[in-house]
Length: 336
Image: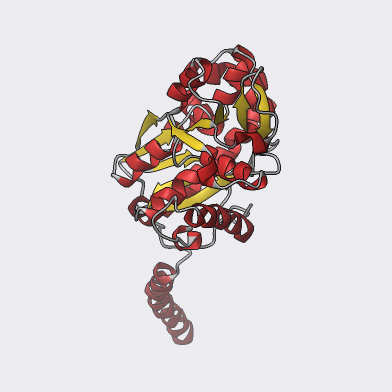
């Protein structure tokens, strides 16, 4: 071997030896090559639902969340209405749940620490004011002086607020009787109250069971919005989990639309409702009903709910809904 060839090969080896560590260092420094830490999952996810929470019931019955969150224990808790659910959430007994438009306003006014994290499309036909078939109440104005059963702080309360205003009445012109849905139905059936403000599936069950007269649905009165709320600490610690929950809820809605017969049976099994009632209240839901973070329009709609309650003295202070609306960074979900 010539001296020049020997020197040339020696220099190549030296350059190669110097390049490998440098290349390795550059690769290790590259964010693309670094192992990305897995998104942190909570030890448990405690979810509150009601019989009307179709998409949550589907996820529960099919075990979907247990499959997606393999490192988290999924705990399901049922509530008769939104106020009770949000009380549990604010007390630290829940992480995530669904309510109508009224409960979050009352919770915020009471300084409960929670966040609006998602919403479904409006369901105005899924709530109603009911009277007995032979009742002398023919118009909303006829509610003056009448005893009306409703769950305090619920979406039914805003429906009634809007009905009273449309009739040209004052809130003090009626006699609200605050009862949970099951007790309200019993009072209505025995004639202890003159009317009942209620939502599905209780509305549908009553409609098929003893055929009350519908004085008015929410159409033209209330959008009957449904909101997903979460504890602030849970949302801030596990934003990816919250977004994944919203994603699974939208997938569940698609499943509802494509498998109506199976879903009706799933809901009947968990709720104790008969299939006819389930089919009825499913028909009143918008098709489709995806879940997304709140849009400015929806926040404004909810602010009108809050302002109405404050104007009537139903909540102790004015609230700004936008203050507790979650705005996730780079949310992959379209706003409503």
